[in-house]
Amino acid sequence: MKKNAAVIGYGGMGAGFHVKNILTSDVVNLAGIYDIDPAKQAKAAADGVKVYESREALLADPSIDMVTVATPNDVHEEIAIAALEAGKNVISEKPVTLSMESLERMIAAANKAGKIFSVHQNRRFDVDALAMKQIHDSGEIGEVINIESRIHGSRGIPSDWRGIKKYGGGMLYDWGIHLIDQACMILGYDIKSVQCHFDHITNDEVDDGFQLNLEFASGQRAYIEVGTYNFIAMPRFYMRAKKGSAIITDWRVPAHVVKCKAWHESDVIPVVNGSGLTKTMAPRDSITTDEYDVPRPVSDVHDYYRNFVRAIDGLETQMVTHDQMRTVLRIIMKAFESVDNGGNVVEW
Ligand SMILES: NC(=O)c1ccc[n+]([C@@H]2O[C@H](COP(=O)([O-])OP(=O)(O)OC[C@H]3O[C@@H](n4cnc5c(N)ncnc54)[C@H](O)[C@@H]3O)[C@@H](O)[C@H]2O)c1
Image 1 (spheres, rainbow, N blue to C red):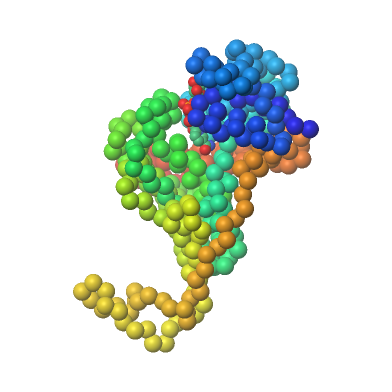
Image 2 (cartoon, rainbow, N blue to C red):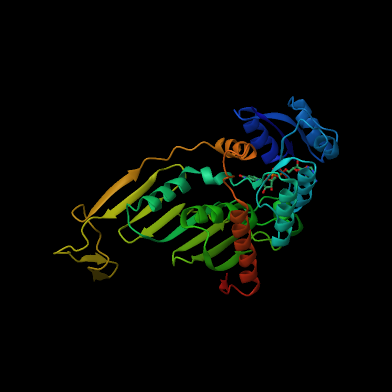
């Protein structure tokens, strides 16, 4: 049977994503929304959505099974704990919260209430990240050495709460948490060290971009970069492995693989490169490599709510687990520590 879902926060994500998706979901009905801003309450009513007059009224409605928190980052904890204490299952938008202590309070409240509590890592459904995971897991280009994951725009950081520290602003929390979560989805959750630098090009208070290095216990590495002042975007993903390389130049195009089929070439012809000559950097040909595009993986973001509902019913484990939430948030905390220490490597 469908669950009744309410949304707190009727802004960009609450109205533009959660309510829209709930209305087209096969596992949840929309019970209604609450937003602290009367203008948003009025907008929801004009959109034909049921509006609760207060958060207390929403949480007191016994027909509501689950609540999605889609407010600015600094109030996720308070709202999520109130909802859990009212006996609701809770999805928090990302970042789940702004400190490890805060996350532990949320997890403790969920455990005490015996309710499902997870974070909306919807970008696990991005087909570019899924393609990279597929190439990694298949072993088709051998053991993966490192991945590079970048998102580049040129419009600066948004002028809303995302530019203000006390609300949990900054690109590390905003986009970074997605790219970190994707890197862990591909390479695992066993982290060895974190190192990070921030950009402050358009905003002094919070990072408007960053460059982050993650080292995994396996020895594999991820380089993660978000830029809001990049007028030329670098490729979205790059992967190096022992028997080939993969690239996704842009999230609209499939992954492209070049796979080594013969390591040695008997007669490499030196090429002119700049003002010199090189054999080492001579391009490969089809005698020693195969090249192909990887068909884009099939993905349905509705699967996030489907899994959450099945987790409530005890039929599946929640796809974003508490331990994964802990690891991803801890990487963010270690990144802040690295920035505070001048970009030093911080051990796990
Ligand atoms: N997963 C994703 O892809 C994704 C994308 C965008 C935003 N987000 C996340 O969603 C959350 C909201 O972001 P947004 O872009 O929708 O912001 P927004 O500013 O557009 O909307 C936030 C809404 O929350 C309301 N609000 C603020 N405090 C409240 C409170 N105490 N109680 C009730 N309502 C309150 C505001 O009035 C506003 O309408 C953030 O955590 C953000 O990181 C996630």
